Image (cartoon, rainbow, N blue to C red):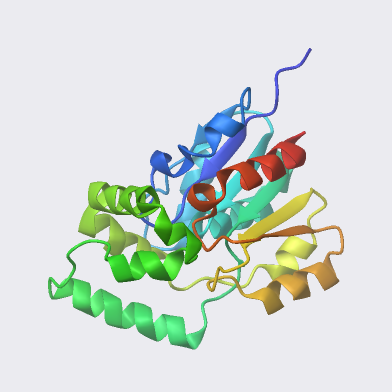
Length: 232
C-alpha cells in the first residue's frame, strides 16, 4: 500500500506550528508537514523559496490566511507538483486600497517603535464573539506573535502587501481546489470567492458557522472533517 500523500501546511502572518495544535489531534494518521513562511522581499521570492522547500514527489498543499495566498500562488506556479489545494481563510486577490493604506500606516507606526505585541482588540477583530469566550485562542495568537517578534512582522507585511489577483490562474488549474472560511470572517472577500466559483465551478467552498478568521483554533473539528475529505 502506498504511503499517503503528505499535506504541506503554510501558516498565516505571525503564526507558527502552534497554529495546528488543536487541529492535528482530529487528523490521526495524516502526514502533516508544517512549512514556515520564509524571508524575502516580495511575493515572488517567497513563492520561489517555498518551492525549493517542498518535499520530493507530489504533495497536497494547505494554506491558512497569508499561507492560503502563498499556497495558491505556489500551486499556480507548480501545478505538476501539487495533488490538491486547500485555501483556508483567504481569498487570493490583491489587497483593497483601504487595507493598503492601513498597512502603510501600520508599517510607519512600527518603525516609530509603537508595537507592543498583539492586542486584545486585534484578537477580537480576528475571531468570532463566541470564540472570545475561550481565552486559550487569544493566548495562542499572542504567544505566536511574541515568539516571531517585530522584525518578522515588518518583513511579512512589507513582502506581501503588493500581491496579484490569482483568480484567473486558479481557475485554469486542473487539480482539486477547496476553500473554507468562518462565517464571521470579515477578511475573506465573498464576491471574489463567488467569481472564482463562476470561473471554476469545480471549486469546493465551505463556510464554517460560528467561526471567525482563526479557523484552525476556533473550529478545529469542523476544519479537520473538511481536510480529511479533501485529502482522502
